[in-house]
Length: 198
Length: 344
Image (cartoon, rainbow over all chains, first blue to last red; front, side, top):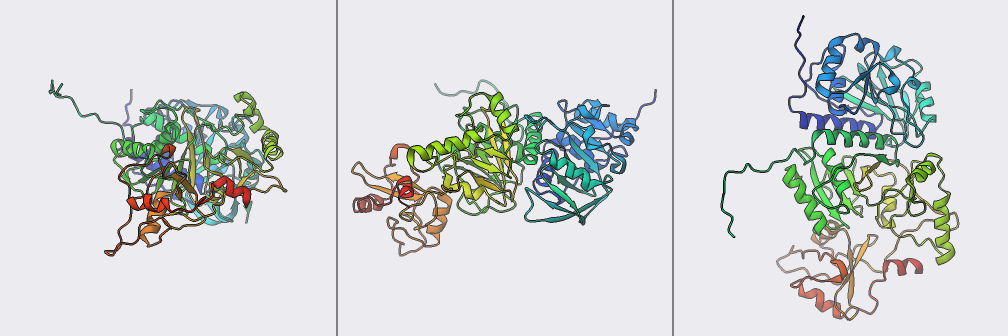
């Protein structure tokens, strides 16, 4: 039997989790404005440090987690998340409260995930997409949390991103919420935001 | 009986901000969903807190989940920093989190409030946490939770408009003066907690993040920054806030919410800012109302703000000038908020 070393979690779980949560909270409060998310985690690839920090801060035994194909293929990723969060890892995306997507380019349709029900729209998934970079153009955002309009872009993003987000917006108050994590930052695109090309 | 040491007891220590980490994660997840669905009440597993329901257990749990070591906390109760509830909660977080506290609105990064929004305009980096007794705006119209949930899901708010209309039919105007229902981001009708309707306009397009916690009712909801918050009204009966006939008796501020303070048993009363920090800051700047102590020759001496006590009780040993000037106060000095509003 082969043993392997498990990557460590937060050195200071209380304050690290609080800091990561605050970044995610401001990210969703200010859609499209990336917030600083500093972390010294070294999770197993292809899980990014920022996505791992969000997982450790927000997931536990109450939150089934879904991993995309690239993450699920790497056993160490599942072991890391299971050990540090205690979250059950599910194969069925519709059962997940958090879904980690390492390769947004060919991710599942949003409709594969839980979008809540009219009486409980909060019973929906939060997607955590690993991105490489953020820019301030490509899409125009409007909605709660944004004064006027805001230019936003990130790479990589799923195909037909604006159309997906528009479809998600029409479901409101049902829908999925996105946290984009990467490059020491996290940006939020809650279901309340209207995303247009250009 | 004197307390004799019977053995070495370890000092009582708490996790940072009292709550355990799993509870904080659960509350944090609820907060994130609440922000994503502005005005929607997210159910959460509220814990028992070391204070009774009705003392802000919901607000305290939200604050505990959000609070970090670098935060500067301000707690107000009806606008005042020095009333029982505010002092107790501030002390709670000083003890369990060791965070810095302040009474100055501009210095605070996190403000927990019971039933007021500060007069000083809030900024982008501030979080306002409301203590909420009854989060469901439709509760007194429809007692069943299953039904109110359906009504929210269907965006069916006719009941609320009927209630406001019945106010008009009975009183000639919308008589709801606090916990005045608002529509958030064009979708959910929300209870803004029992703030005076005077404060409703401050929620609209507010740069700060507004979080609401109801402990007994186990609900969290939120208004993200720069979100449209509209007070419900009718075309022919537009929403209006209370107006006051006179400025604050201590700092001469106008356009602020005033509390009535009973001064004696012969009808003497004064109207002072409900926001103590705002009032004190104005007095420090040299503003003087009609009942304020004159500026002393040494300069800069500021009277402590006379916090209104329940039932108009006054503490003994308050500035004697207050009592003296009260006797000379003109009959009907300062219209009551509601009387003035009808007249306006």
